Image 1 (cartoon, rainbow, N blue to C red):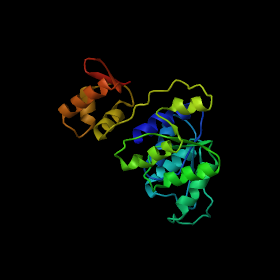
Image 2: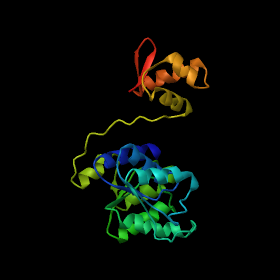
Image 3: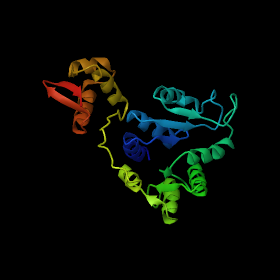
Image 4: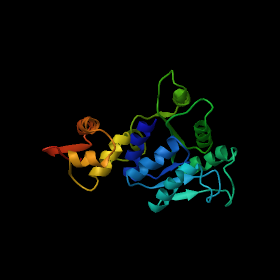
Length: 232
C-alpha cells in the first residue's frame, strides 16, 4: 500500500493535483508525505481541533504541510479531542472537497469504504487499486471494483480519466532502512570516500559496503571511482 501510494500520489501531485487525506497513521500519512516529496500541495482534514493534531506522532507532518503551503482543515472547535465518532464524520469532508476518491487499501468494514460511500452520495468519481484476493486489506478495494469503481495501477489512469497529460515524474529516492539513512545523511553535503561514510555511522565497514552496492544497483548512489560516492 505504501509503495502504491508513493507511485500514484507522486504522479498526481507533480501534475498539479492537490492531494486530500486525513493525516492518520498509514496510507493517509503516506499520501501527504509522498505529496511533499513531490513538492506538491496537500490538504489534511482532521477529526479533532486544530490545536490537537492526531496522532501526536504526526505533529512534524502537520508542520511540514503548513510550511509547504498546504492546509489543515477541521470542523471542530479548538480543544476538541480526537473522538472515535469524529473520524467517520470527517470522511464526508475528505470526499466532499475532492474531485475523486482513490482507495488504496480497505477491509470490508474500513473507514476508507465510508469515504467511498460518501463520495458516491456526492457524485464523486471512485477509483480503486486492485489487490490479492486473499488479502484482507484488499477485500474492500476489490469489492469496489466489482461495484464499478475505476481500476487504477498508476497515476496515468486517473490523469487520462480527467483528460490531463502526465508530466514526466521525478525519480525520488529515499532511505529504505536505517543504514541507508546513515548513508543518505553522510552524502547529503556532497561526494565522500567510503572511509568517511563508515566513520559517520555505527555500522561495520562490510555492512556499509554491501549497502552502498545495493544502493548503487537501485540507482540511489553513484560510484565516482576510487570508492568515492555521491547521491544519484
